[in-house]
Amino acid sequence: MTTRSELEAVPTPTLPGAASEAQAEALARRKDHHLDVCLDEDVGSLVASGLDAYSLEYDALPELDLDEVDLSVTVFGRRLAAPIVVGAMTGGTSRAGELNRRLARAAQQAGVAMALGSQRPMIVDPAATGSYRVRDVAPELPLLFGNVGAVQLNYGVDADAIRRALEAVGADALNVHLNALQEAIQPEGDTRFSGLAEKLEAFIPVIGVPVLAKEVGAGISGRAAAKLSRLPFAGIECSGVGGTSWARVESHRAPSGSIQAEIGRRLAGFGVPTATSIRNCRAAFGERLVVASGGVRTGMDVAVALALGADLVALARPLLEAAEDSEASCVRALETLLHELRVIAFCAGAKDLRALRQSRLLGRGGAPVRLDLPSTP
Image (spheres, rainbow, N blue to C red):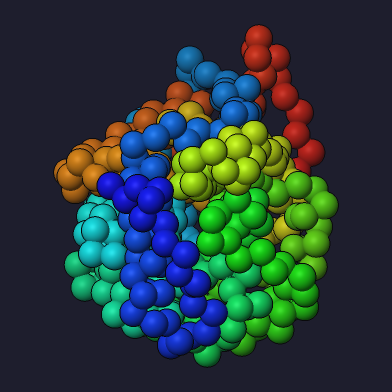
């Protein structure tokens, strides 16, 4: 495990292809340290996702057979067996590469999508590219999302570099992640976020694949959703408060006793809970793709997220823990999740995803919840 004493004061790369050996090694250590912290420390948010405040109405007479339930969905022309994404996690080191390969093979077996972790390491150091390549071990993976930080547009990363990174891994779409809180706490954080809306407006149309905005665990407010919806994004992933807190992750990585470590702990619940973030995104993005994430742990969480307005649902840490154990554990975790979702749909009398999204939501105490949301595709 990487220790705080190993956080050397090596400046991180700012230009594609400009990484020195020391810079590349520092970035790789950071990625492995993130894995260590996420797997070994308590990094949960201090605030709940809000998904557990709801459940779907149970129908004792569903009038369909369990094997009639069809969870499939088509996204960007790719057919998924279920509306699930193996969420963005890691990349950039040999250890991360092995985890990505396990996750990809499991996603392929389940017929669901996968999102790569930030591809910045391979942009600044081409030697890291192999840790993101999963198509060779999972050629039938139905949908693969690439990943780059929006703030990197202010640090010399341009559309050409990102297109090359996407082509190198065979990505079908791109997540552009927004992580202002994480960067502000991270010891090596990149915090020049000014002028990004204008740069994104020019960048998105020329990248060549559908581009989604994506938070990383602090959620999307109504104000942020409105601003992002004015840009030509194909969709958005809300990644709300309630799961892994990246402020808390970075507090574990910051030097012991530092101001950053203390602030990271204090702000571990700062942001917008997942349930609220989903509704904000659906209201602002209309019929564009909305991906729910942040504290998703069970099939009921997935079902509630869909009923709140999501098209797809992503989860990361539970699958990271499973993949760290073995590929078989990851397959088991996905199969269990999908079967649980199928049983919920059956018991709600929903034969497909459209019907499941229209299922009645119940709040605490069993009272029906009225949602005024745009219809989903």
